[in-house]
Length: 338
Ligand SMILES: CC(C)(COP(=O)(O)OP(=O)(O)OC[C@H]1O[C@@H](n2cnc3c(N)ncnc32)[C@H](O)[C@@H]1OP(=O)(O)O)[C@@H](O)C(=O)NCCC(=O)NCCS
Image (cartoon, rainbow, N blue to C red; front, side, top):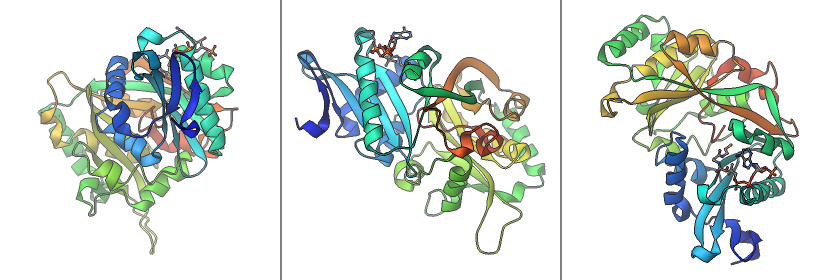
């Protein structure tokens, strides 16, 4: 194995760079199911293949035939912003210091990649682990997991009526109707403006929009300038283990966010979900309008949450206290990608 692939090696364990998503796909999916992180089998390719090929680092047990017993991801976005992700060690190997070594490997990778803003969404139990390595909690940085039952037929009909009566209904665009099917670059720019994440690869046809479980709406702005389309927000929905995940939900104001959320909650494809399936969303405490919006549409706090943290307290200006994110991010895409 070449040096460049390897971060650590002793008699029993090795930490090395993954070569392809197929190498660890089965292990990844087991971990996602065990942790109940509400993923979809296609998410791995959407995340890892879109960002950069070698974005995941593996922990191997050499005495078990190089069995994969843990992984961590460093997702490097375009604008020197990075995200620590997919940090899991097999339960049988926890508490031995291996997770710490894996995390240190990802941090050294982040330094080598020249990442300026390195963030993550921490589970409560690991906050101290990250603090000890220099991560600082973001102001009002709690990301709450909300849930609600999938709307039944009558509820969906009521939601559709509410959408039809909204004065901005004609500005709603079904993202699946766009040809070719990918996010218009103005919407990618909109995300960048309000979050500081620039990630056109993630929102591409190749990595996201060819998935049959993805749906979404954008809201065209009524004050469109002559030479470019501008938007008041966008929302995505995708299938996940428990039903459907909604996020990101980005919007100019609470009214636009409500219209987008109603549109996505009234979508017709829920018949394929299991009877006890639910909708899930990871929403931002920093946006004061968020809880009112979601609770008003029947969502409850599941009690699970993440804490957003940034290395050395350095975060994109959008994510500082009172920054653009606190006004326009209603739900994140996923704690795994920020
Ligand atoms: C997080 C995880 C990957 C750590 O792996 P591990 O092999 O147990 O890690 P280590 O033994 O190296 O311990 C890592 C750190 O966690 C601390 N730690 C270990 N067990 C802990 C526990 N039960 N509660 C809180 N901290 C704990 C250790 O002190 C260590 O900190 P240090 O490196 O600063 O000294 C592992 O616990 C796991 O897979 N958890 C479930 C998935 C998860 O929550 N991932 C984090 C998402 S943000």
